[in-house]
Length: 271
Length: 316
Image (cartoon, rainbow over all chains, first blue to last red; front, side, top):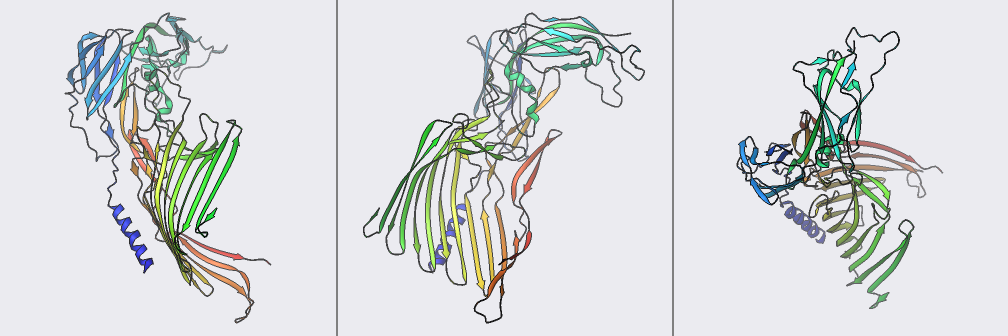
């Protein structure tokens, strides 16, 4: 009899506890912010939503185009104007280097905030050559009888006493792209490419990195650590889901300042 | 120490360890008490402080399932973990049956977890330190009813428990620990008939928690290319499906000797068993892959139905 009573109690407790509803929802509607503050630009920002993993999710009732977004600089508040598609701008405030910008707005009953500083313009930016000559490598290419000598690398240097982050982006300026090498059946490369972020005071660019002949714009960006972390290759590893290291609270994406200097390079065909 | 005609028994002890890495001694006091209310009914309790120098660290891997590894404490990045236990219960025992109910509470300090999923300070924290420390607790009630004698024996047990951890890097408050199982029910039956031993056991447990990708977003980089990032759910906020399975076995004792002999020698046994008789697809962990901006989920399962035949022989 006692044994049956114990079994009854066990089953009763199990049944009662089993009625407690467990919350298995995993998606929270947290906004995505994308803003790059460059000196000379207006204050600008884009807000969007995540793409959920599950189709059965609850979105916030907030309208992405009707948010009250405030950016504070030098104790002055600027309320951004919506342009549609989640884009916001304030044409009364021009971004300046060295300034701190604080952003906040309310979304899904949470206060979304972020801050950033605009780094100084790169100084001492120089290149070892303004023109490099590269052999065209198509189906007719054969090394010369005396051997084929690789051109010297292009050396870019700049001042970096505080070991902050810099990114070099190279853009081809030609209207029609003239490829250096035959891509064959592969997709043609973009006319723009970049180097990995670095904390050093210079980099070396091998001529093979250039895909096209013509005039190029070499842009040296002075960026913050949060922007440099976007280029962390381990982000897409199956071992981790490291998200950008940002100052954004209750939101994702990037809210950062950056500055730049530009040099020019001509990639000519070596005849 | 025994008091009140040996009804009350108190046992105390002290264990001391010296750990060279940290250069200090660790004291682990413990005590237990029991009181016989009747010759069958006993109430008991115990408490103790425990240290652990070899730590089992969970390496968080949301996409491929968490893995665990053991590492010796260094007193800094991987501190010496400790726990304090409180246990109280009562038991009722007859010649044929045992019934017990026990409650426990454990407070655990210096838990360590390893994760590459962090958000460092935007002003430039070092990414190299990926060991995180936290604390947690576990509490619950365990009930047991057991039949000890006769051809038919076995037991039924039920436990209601909660295990939670707190790591600042994951959340502001407590979240379910990796091993948190709310309900666990077991029933084991054993039947002996001549040379045969039959057994069956059924296990049921509610699902363990896990973390999963919850969404994705894209950021445009300076060179015009885009990069996808993925967000995950709150730590351990989702539960795997409940776990249950039924195992059965039959064991036949091999004896040497004629029928009616009182001095048969045991030769060995032949046993046949089936693990997971109804082939329940219990999930061990989930794997996620990202293809073309879409998150795909794959469930890694435990062993399905597995028959087993064993012959064991005793050599003289």
